[in-house]
Length: 280
Image (cartoon, rainbow, N blue to C red; front, side):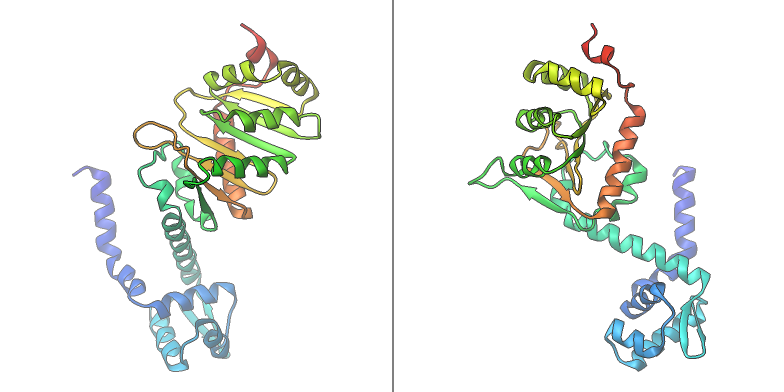
């Protein structure tokens, strides 16, 4: 056993009864989460949790013994420790909820394209949904994304795969006050230059409403941010891009998460300039 693993096991042994204390009681967890919102009296807690006064009071008594909740003038509040613990509980709940909701995409897919710090915050995607192909509409995911792109004036797209109709849409609308920021592999950029009007690219770059950068050819991801959505496509573990499903979210929290993902790749990409694209 390596030292890191031993440290984790030792830490777990030290706190396992604290974990069980919370995990065994829905009431205690709901009290902690409810009190994160504000200090509350018993009537408000009953309204939030939907259980009897005696059941809630018993849970409060147990939390008080652990120094997680205090009472003052008939109102219950979290202690600083209780506040920190409830925050972590909510993060775990959101993360598990997001993983369950997105399991059809995450399962058997390569998620190494997402940095660990963002995987840790996967709870930000709890309001996402998976858009899938249908037997009667095999291109459904791409057509839905195309519709969303057509309504967006600011688009950020990073990808190691190419769906030509959506790229053509972005370049065709560069003249319509659309700002487009692309981060692509060299292979995809070369293919785009073969298929779109290069003059549109040159004009967009010169006018500043098009930015293009190159990322590592080994990156395995397709990701788009529009005005009010993010869309994430992944490669299967067999190495092929999954054309039949992507994650879609329109929540502010998910969009903020997506901005961080894009910035991660932007920081690692080659600087944007005309010579990079149109040079030798």
